[in-house]
Image (cartoon, protein in one colour):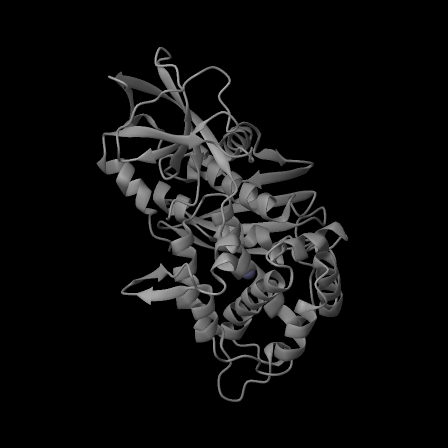
Amino acid sequence: MIAMPTTRTLAGCLAALLLSIARPGSAAAPNVFPQIAQRAAACVADQRFAVGDSVVELTFDPAAFAVGATPVCRWVAQAATAVAGYFGRFPVRHEHVVIRPVDGDGVHGGTTWGAGDTDGRPLSVIRLGRAVTLAELDDDWVMTHEMVHLAVPSVPRNSHWLEEGIATYVEPIARVQQGQLSAKKVWADMLHGMPKGLPAEGDRGLDRTPTWGRTYWGGALFCLLADVEIRRRTHNRSGLREALRGVIAAGGNIEQDWPVAKIIRIADDATRDAGALAGLYSEMGDAPGPADIDSLWRRLGVVADGAGIRFVDDAPDAAIRKAITATDATGAYSSPALTLGGHYVVAFGAIPPDLSFYYPAYVCAYPNCSLANAQAVQLGAAQNYPNIDLAIPHLDLIFRGGFDP
Ligand SMILES: [Zn+2]
């Protein structure tokens, strides 16, 4: 399971925190929290919600789960929002999500089919503990993993690693890009997990070695190597995300049966990078491929440090590492505010629990607050606020994920 983001602990520990204002906000970015809240509300009311032109339809019994309907709906809406953000749109027109209650707590796993429901449309079945907790739903990766599967055309059985590899690799990246995970957590998990995907003695390549490690983590390693290679070739302008968006734009998703070569050709064409994926597939498809990833971590600037990791920002590919896990999502919340002399004081306790793990990054205290006119927040030092109206009794907090330095 994924550990609690550090800022939730911070939010819980600090009853109030002084905000200081440093510099104007940056350009507008998608505002994620209202989308998640609207989708969750529609889900509670109708057991379905829209994501752009797509519909996610749920079948579940809210009374089966001790937490009630809203957290379950928010969990599904959060995953759908992360996946739509990564791929630029929700990958299929209609997904049916069946949530089956099982004994105990936790999220117990899921399966997704391209033509699984009675209408022949995409279906995910997720087994969810009747006693699942709010923290388990917030930390869950399974729902997002299953929805990433929707974006990948079905491939022949021996190339199953491509489907699972993309789901394994993209799931945390989609979540960190929407501010649902920290970059440090994502890279720590990759540093820990990727060695499970390395070729063992006698390996015959990803297409011919259908072990668990090679299928999930070997496929994820293929994706990481592809992401880095595409970014090197395009000077960090495109990555695997743009390649996979190209597959969706060409009509590829779980409802289609495509050979691997077609996916790779279309994905390579989408980034105009002269065949990064094709090159990797020829190295790793029917041969063991690269077996040393230590040099990859060194170049990216990811170093094991006790139980966690630290980043080395002058590593040669540090900019690529930062781009892969950059967060481009924000959310907004209006908090009651106390003014104290020339300072604002915001009580973290006033922020709803479903937002408290996001870090307030920008603040306004005047009408029509938006990211364009907000000011960046630095926590921990009290300063004066020359540009906000101290007469307004609330702060409009704009959150941005990616709370690691
Ligand atoms: Zn999977």
